[in-house]
Image (cartoon, rainbow, N blue to C red):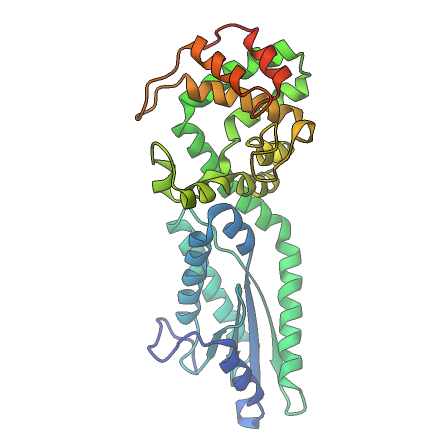
Length: 341
């Protein structure tokens, strides 16, 4: 059987239980040689964590279609795990397997060129059963081992590619919020001088001004653009952005140094914040300082649903929340600076 150009209607991605039955039945001489090919979608957990499960589902569906369009009518294509797929190719030589894999990789390249907001990459391995004496399940295990060897070789390249995708989304986020970020940076510069921060600490708080809410790139768009109070379920979803942002920051070398600050910038001094209910000095110093900067900027910025507070009104609100939401000593230092923006 030769490789096909388009997907035949007879090919469907089958569940693992069907794959096991097909594997078990691979015991006839006229079916040999038979190849077992194993694919694993690279970085799917990271994509789910930082871009959301909808993005991960798009990758799975895309690869599902690619496989269906890349193998022969009689080949068994199956999804055998969350991010793993396998194919049984009866009556074929290695050149046929290589040709099919090349077809898959070409279609992946096409997908990536047409979908700049996502990145699809797979690791692959295969093994061939040539004699009736070979246990098909051992051949499957051999193919799986080859796939993991391939994944190990590609690990850093995969991380770099996903980091590049995330960085692009961060830049888009920065562009959308440039005015707000510039206001935060002005406050951070003045407050950093007031507190006598080291150059390293200043650079971290500047990064935090730019990327503190990067976790929001994985949240629903309608939630991001909603004004006013959030419903309870919406608030729970919103609060996930700190944890998502932490995972995302770890994956991007440029901002990995502020991952802990991204995670903790919504903690409250009295322990009533989120996500970890940290209290007092359990909260990183720079996160405590940034919380004051962010709150002041938000209070003095015009919103679609309310007018901005005057400087004096915002200062009064910070003082009211000193000791509960904010570090009282840092609030005192901030209030001594005078109006900055």
